[in-house]
Image 1 (tube, helix red, strand yellow):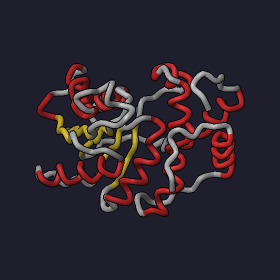
Image 2 (cartoon, one colour):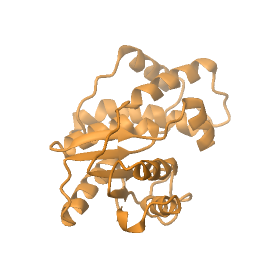
Image 3 (cartoon, rainbow, N blue to C red):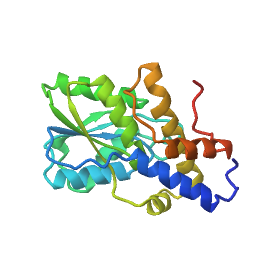
Image 4 (tube, rainbow, N blue to C red):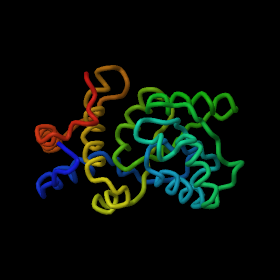
Length: 221
C-alpha cells in the first residue's frame, strides 16, 4: 500500500484490534529493574521516567543502537537519546545504565541481561518499557531468553488514535502493527520467543490488512 493512499475506516478498526492485542495490560508493581527498549518512539523514555519517579524501580537501563527507522531521528543511537530525555525529565544520571549496541529485540534482552550481570545486578523481576504495540513481542522474547525472571510490560497510556497522532505517520504505525504481529506468530517457530495465542478475530484482521498491502514491515520467513 502506497504512502499516499487513504486508510479506510474498516482498516482503522482492524488496526485498532491488533493494537489492543499487542498490549499485555499488566498491573504494574515495584520491580528490581526496568529496561527501556529502543525504537523510534521517544515516549518509551517518557514513560520510563514517569515510572521511575513513581518509585517502581531503582535502576533504569536503556538499550538500543540504530535501525533504518531511527538513524535519522536518533543519530547518536536510541539508548543514548532515551537516556538524555529521561535525565531531562528528572531521572538521576547515576540511576541509568546504557546498552548502546542492540539491533533487535532479542539483542535488547540478551545484552541488557548480560550488562546487568556484569554489574552484579541479578534481578528476579524486570519491567520492560516499550512502544505500546511492542509489549507482547518483547514479553514473548524475554520469556524465551530470560526464563528465570518475572517479566512485566508497560508503555505510554495512549489510545490508538492519540498514539498515531503523536507519531505523525499513520502508514508507519499500521505497517508496524502488522509487522509486529507477524513476528509474534512466526518467531516461536524460529526459537526467538515463546508462543502466544492469537485470537481468531485478531488473525483475521491481520490477514486482511496484509491483503490490503500493509506489508512493508513483514519479514521473509
